[in-house]
Length: 472
Image (cartoon, rainbow, N blue to C red; front, side, top):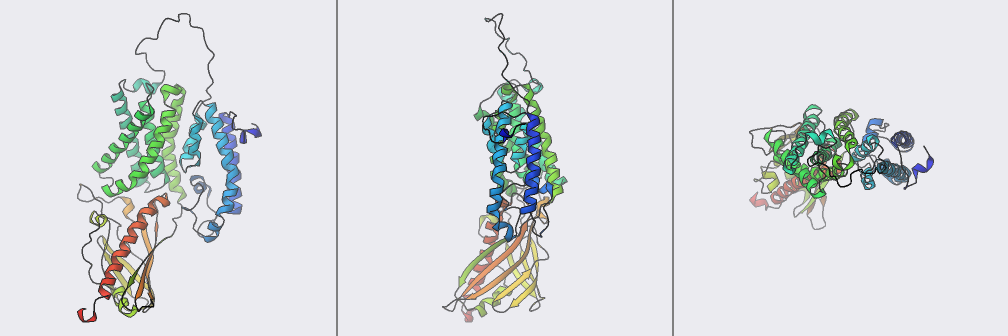
């Protein structure tokens, strides 16, 4: 081990040095962050398993204002470790005879750990000394068996090897999805990033086990595996069409990255010793899913706020905020394919302590009133939430685990702001949590849906409040 291995981009790093440097740098970075920055939403120290699974930036993890204010210093502290990790990984890939550009995966959550695992298990690969050929005119016999066991059990034809890769990747995807969702009930980084990445990797590795394949072919095989997997999920009633379509952009992107890596280390190109990288990546997935289940990362509190101007005074608007009659059937396509939508609101009692019931297409929200400031502010908690959607499926009814508690509203409010022209600005806010990662991806979906729900209610209140008193 030499210190210059931490900054020399032209160096070579063996497996032992890579492992020791990795452990030392991780321990130093963990303790440095633990002492300077790392606290959870309740002020506790984040455990080492959670720290291991999540990478900077931490917007999916930490929610305290003090931590957000320290994002700049956290980045400054992280940069030297990022540099050293990239340099070591490039040196290890070079030593293993793998393309150094694969080090770009080092900056991506979850994928960095899979890349480091591959770099750790890949053997040193040096150029062999040339051996004089006693019979230079002789050629290798056609159809000679490949030197790796994976190639020997893979069909010889392109179509056959492609089918083998697709079926193996589909089987792996099904096993990973069932383990993550139904056994561990965990919709995390490993499920949405790790599983499709490894499936793309597996499909490409098997497709190129017997004969070196082109990158374009490898990508097509990987994408075909995703299509077959989506059909299998629907066929076996694991998920519905809506969730499959929502997860598709993330799954396809990660499968393509896995396909590129699998193509770079395909056994027919890199030799039989790279088969151990295949096993390392495959066996890493259940370990990652299990570790993520044990870490139990806290879900951040998210906020969606929508507003609408109404040509009516706050006193009249308030009457329709507290409770409102049944809304007309929705016209938006996402509500018509199963996403839950509001139907009506009822209230039992008056003032703080009253209970409001906002009835959705999938069931009622039970909302005890916390603040009753007529006609300015109505704030309520949420003690019961219905499922966020009804799955669109060819079967009569399926109920995957994510429909129960993975997207949960915590509280909401209506604020009525008087306008100079005598009208009212009605502002609706929902605070919620969801336990699906990466949050930044799924929040884009949930924020958009909740905003549409807000607008459906606000527009109905506006239409009712703007009616002439004689017509009400």
